[in-house]
Figure 1 (cartoon, rainbow, N blue to C red):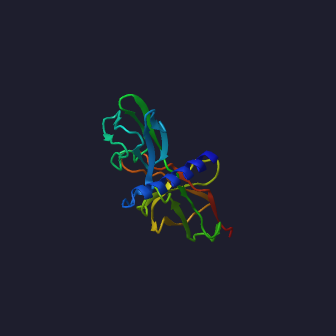
Figure 2 (cartoon, helix red, strand yellow; figure 1 turned 120 degrees about the vertical axis):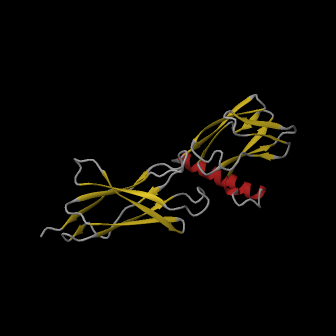
Figure 3 (cartoon, rainbow, N blue to C red; figure 1 turned 135 degrees about the vertical axis):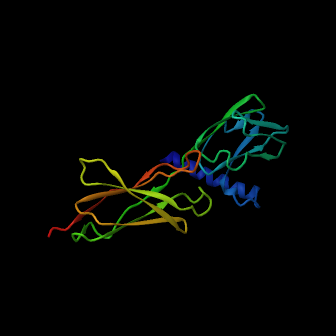
Length: 224
């Protein structure tokens, strides 16, 4: 947890520096700097959450070249200048190896960004045959993505007791309300039922977020 907090603080600080360096770029807060030095890139191994992207700054007096092993990105950086790949090159989780000047081996390791999903209702007990509104929120980090998130599916699972596995009950859509995504579902359980919500959607082509589950919510019809 302490390591995660330090990483977040470093990213925020680097984002502020990026705003100073690139004030006209609306996505500057997503940038993380890598320094090009006579001894190679610093840091040589950069780990960052999905949604952020690296920018190489040449702190040397000679130009340096950056070439990725997958062949999808390469550029040269003049002294005092900066270089970067396209904004979506490292947008998804993965290991991206590269070299500087064909000599120094380095990498950018993108890890899935966290998110959370909740499930609740106004009561745990309902009248026989009555409906109950389950609802909750799906939260994703402000900087990742950098704009209010698009609607995402939420899977509602259910089981009758702890001796049976959860099974998919319904898929609903969490829609945008500011920086939050809200969802709801009306259910009519005929017997005691335990519900949980799951967020497992990903963009096409790879992983962006971690999978998230809500706490279980138990509902039971009142005895007649």
